[in-house]
Length: 244
Image (spheres, rainbow, N blue to C red):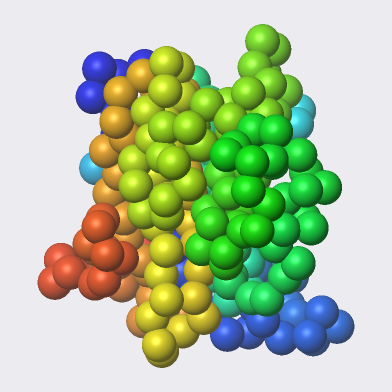
């Protein structure tokens, strides 16, 4: 693991992903998912996406292999909700990310069912902001610890909750695990909460990007402000293989 952790998060949005289930194109979801992951790896390593190949491990999690046959210690995680897909790459032993589009749900009932009052301050009257922070932290903790001996996602979740005090947008660092969460409520797109969890004893240092298609074989890469998720002026044109 690096002394200075590095996380690269790549987000994309396509309205077709929100179509009714029978109308969705599974190939589009796969193409966009692969694009997010490959661009995350490329941006994290200052290489090109075509230098890497995606696969699955025994737990069906995404993995990446370079042209030299080595994964270079890079871990991946993927999430999708509504029109959004997000991928993350980093040099960590364990890594997980979750994104959820904000909508009305039975917040307190779900938290009660999952046992959150036993893991957080015992107040089951959760607001929307609290619920979606907790939900994405819960899911990201599961992904980061799935299939890993010696770690229980409930313990990781509980430790990180205590660090961030259930306040979305803050950074949490425990003894072995760290997290960061963002909330986006932009008026021109569905609101969402996004949280990343990694095995790290120091604060995460994420770089955020979004990708937008500019043609059949290319995308535009836009840097996001890590504090607000707003677009910066940094741009790159990077290739995308639509047949992946």
